[in-house]
Structures are given as C-alpha cells and as structure tokens.
Image 1: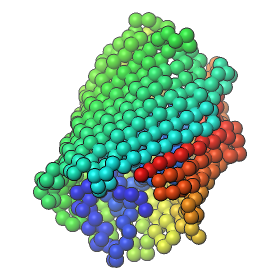
Image 2 (image 1 turned 180 degrees about the vertical axis):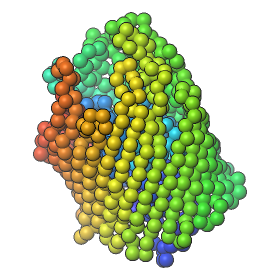
Image 3 (image 1 turned 30 degrees about the horizontal axis):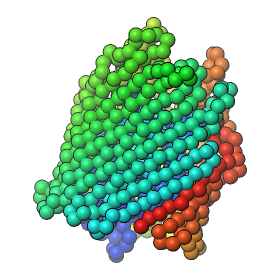
Image 4 (image 1 turned 120 degrees about the horizontal axis):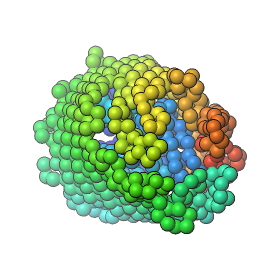
Length: 615
C-alpha cells in the first residue's frame, strides 16, 4: 500500500471509488502527475509507478539512477559510476522525450534538453511518480515518453515536537555519505530542513583512456516551509540545491566539472467553494555547469534558467465528474561563456531566451458505475515555432471479477533545444532556427488484475515519432517506430513480498530498420523482501538483453552490440531499537562485467553500510 499525499481536494475524488467498491477496502495508490490532480491509480488507463520515501530507504539506493533501474518501462544507460552522465529511456523514446518536474516546477538543461538525474540528492526526496505514455496534452513539450515528477521532503507529523533523522555510511570506492533532516509542525506551520553530502573517489569511468579514478562529490540542501490559514487556505515555499564536482574521461577538452542545480517554488492554494479548488504556483530552476581542462584551467560555462508559472483549477461537477483547467507560462533563458574550445570567440547563442504559454483542460469521469474516462486537450504557443495542439483520451473498466481492461490514445511533441536551434556557426555548421518540433502518436491497450494476494498488469503500446532531429547542422529527417510490452506481477506469499517486472522493446529507426541506440530489447527485474522480527532482508535481480551502440573510437564510426547481463544485489537491515537502524547492501554479487554505454565501465562487486537514527 503506497503512502498517499493528503490535501483538502483528495476528498473530491474518494467518492469515485467508494461507489463501486461495494465494501470498505484499503484505498489503492494515488497519483498526482497523471491528471495534475490527485487521482486513484485504479481509475486511470495510464501506467504509473510510485516510489515513496519508505521504498527509497528499503531499497538502500544512493542515487536516482539506481532507484530507476528495473522500473517498468524504464531503461538506464550510465557512463561510469557516481555522478557520471545518465541517459534515461522511457518506453524507448529519447532521453529528451521525458518531462521532469520537481514539486511541479519544470527542470533540466535548456541547452541539451535533458535532465541530470545523477546529480539530484536522493536524501532530499519524499516521493517519485513516473507516468508512462504521452502527456503533452497536460504538460506541453517533452512529454512524449512520459513524465517524471519528484516531490521533495515535507515536514508534517501532527505535533509540535521536532523530528530528527540522521545517517552516516561508507563503502567501496572510498565512498562516504552523510545526511540529516529536521522536520515538524509549529501550530498551523510545517517545516523541513535537510542537508546531505556524498563523496566518492570512484573508479575509471572509460576504457582505453587515462587509467585514473573519476571521483564525485555532491552537497544537497532542501528547505520547505508552509502555513495553513484558518479558512484552510495554504501557502508553501520550497528550495532544493545540489552543488559539487565530478571527474570524467573525455576524448577532447575538459575532464572535470563543477555544477550547481537548484529549484525553488512558491505555491498558494485554497477552496474557492466546496466544489472548486484553485492553486497558483511560481518557480525557477537553474542548471549551471563549468568545465575545466586537466591542468585546472577554465574551458566552458553553460548556465540555463527556467521560469515557471502555473494556475490550476479543479472543479467537482458531480460525484462522478471532475474537471481540471489551467494555464502554464514558461520562460527559458541561457547564458554561457566560450562555447567552442577550438574556436575562441564563439561565446553566445543567436537567441538567449524563448517563452511558451499553454492552456489545458482535463475531464475525469465515472460512467455506468464501473467505467472511467479521461480526456484532455492543450494548446501551446511557443516563441520559436508557433502554435501546437495536443490531446489524449483514456478508458478503463473495473469489473466485479477484478479483471480490468483499459486503452488510451494521445499525441505529444518536443520543442527543439537551444543547441539545436541557436548554436553559433563555428565553421562546422551551427543551429537551425527553422527546425520543427518532434511529434508523436501513441496507442496503448492492456488489462490488470487485483486479487487477494496477487496483483498483475499487462500493457502493449505502439508509438510513432516523426520529425526527429538528427545530424549537424540539425534537420528534421528521421522517424522512429517503437513497440513494446510491459508486464508486472506483485504477490505476498508466506511473509515474502515479490515484485516481477518485464519489459519487451522494439525501437526502430524507420529509415534504416536498425534498433535505436542504447536501449535493451528485453529487461526482467525481480525484487524480493521480508521482515523477520527486527531484521529486514531483500534481494534484487536485474537481467537485460543486448543493446546496440556506436563505437566512437573508430573512424568511420562502427555500430556495435553490447552483450546482455545479469546483476544480483543483496540487502539487509537490523532495527537495533526504535531509534537506531544498521543497514548494509552488497551490489553486483556475481561481479558481472558489463556496459550500458560502449567503452564505459560499470561498478564491479561493491558494498555500502549505513547507521541511521530516527527519533
């Protein structure tokens, strides 16, 4: 049973389930991201995975990429260890085809169009929602493969006593990690303050390069304060920052960088009437990166900023119908130093900012007691390419037998990045300001089952992506066809909790007939856990098939195949008493030698041990 996020508007959606439940039962999980309003998962056609703070601690993961490994519909390709560049493929789409939000604020690099998952401090995260499938009809650009929303930690314990959480640990690769939070309530106010630090000497990230260790250090800070007024209106502000350095192996240019990623937001919400809830959110996210040569001299600087403003209105039309309407305004800005190491003087983009304004609406309805419909439409006006309209529709039927079919259809788009549009011409070509958005159409069907000790789900999807941007100078030339199957089985048997995920994927470049790079054609993950008295034990197995890639150390470049692999992780925790916990994890038990990016090493057998205190 997943922990849910409670707000006053949750009461508006609970009657949808109570009508067909027949008798009091535990509520299924609630997701916010799939409809931009709190909605029960068993009323949606969209596939969603939710990780809570309890899941993060139980799995003993130290980074977001580690949390995402083996997740339904997700594939991870990482260029080394801690802090190294990570590509996330959601349902086989490109890394830039995933919209990422932190507490409702859009984040990620304006120049590359991707998200540095490896740099987000996981100690400051309360919850992660991964919604699979097109979501542009709610969020606009980038949501072709889906949306990932990260919720930072929030203090709310129901009393005025501060609650403290501390942990410290260490392990392989000379890795050290510390974290602490203090949270609680003060009357109508709540707060959370957290800080974390991780430092690792790492290992050699890239083969056939400098045989040095590529280290990483990151300090994370999170702050959140909120106040509830006498009329139940709320105002809340949050701040998240990660700052540090990482080393890497580069074929040319710099080999270490200093980064600062931060996001802050301010949200106000209230019930205008008992059937109308309104929310206003303002925010700003930044992605700053400086790179340096091996001798420590400065190479380049990329500073990008995203301003966000959103207004949402949730209206309960009746017990069976809920309408969400809203507007978004986003302004992207870029500031940089020298862009080209070998062509001094190219230190500015031809355009330094652009805006996007969007209006959207979404209707969530119960029809004939057991049928659920979701329909959404959105219009975007983008300064770079003009207007774009997207829509989606989903249907689900919850039968008395616990067998629940569903289907959905939607289109989506991704705006070109600043690099693709506005990179200066250095003599080897530059950006193309005439690029069109990449666009997609997706259809999905499936069925799920909920029984006494077993839950299962089976989905099949087909996505066509047109106007894919490729080459240099970039042009809209490519087309991809992606087909996949997702299956999940969750059981509780003899005190053991089992979760089995299966992904089958066929992502193809239509022009060449070849599989898209760095995606495994099949993936199977299995997680097993149990509590035995004061001990918690668990194991995780990840098996993935081969994946194609390009060998950039040859000329002309050669296409290669990276072999499949199986990794096994073991974990255990000892509840010493109600306040103290000792945990340990052994990763890659079989010492598997594998790659997810050609030429880049992955961790061998390694361990991590932590001591935790919670009052």
